[in-house]
Figure 1 (cartoon, rainbow, N blue to C red):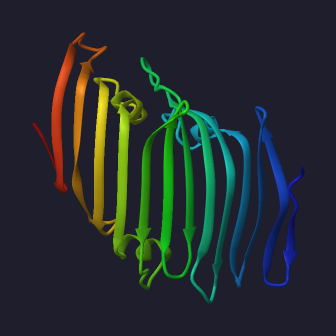
Figure 2 (figure 1 turned 180 degrees about the vertical axis):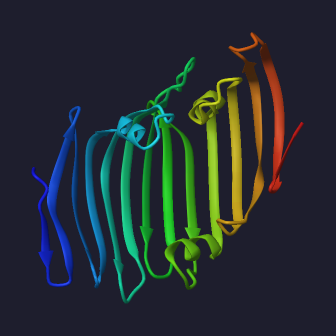
Length: 231
């Protein structure tokens, strides 16, 4: 549908407009004016390769479905809601590509807090879960409030290390094997304090650049503040 931008009493309003690409769709609507800003978006099988327009080195594959709502009134605190499902997320580099995973994310922002939950699945198996709460939100801009307010977060992962590692797009070395990760975070987003443990068995460390290949690697690690100690 053609995008229509209308001048209204105190600003500009974007009437609902739909962008269709490679079988997916993005529907946008919004308002910008003296009274504030509003954005609504709906994604349906939207290809993640669109993000390469902003950064050509991302190399992301998969599709996104969900909705985004955000409102920032001139005389009040911003609010928003995110419901996102990413199917078949991959990242491809020059030599390697990650195995596809599915991610679901729900997040809600109000005047008091930001709360978020995420689930990671590979095939029909759930391999990771995360949740975070930032509250109470203080004063200042939205970024200042989020970065400086108290953080409580947890992340759990039990699956192949390769699934996470290849998403980093680091290709000099490749890590694989069974990984168990449990981490809790406190402090603030700008200065997090992380506590937790990780362990791997039947690990693999390979390098397509040097030809190095290590098998049956066992290691354990502990997070303490900003440090990770591996033995």
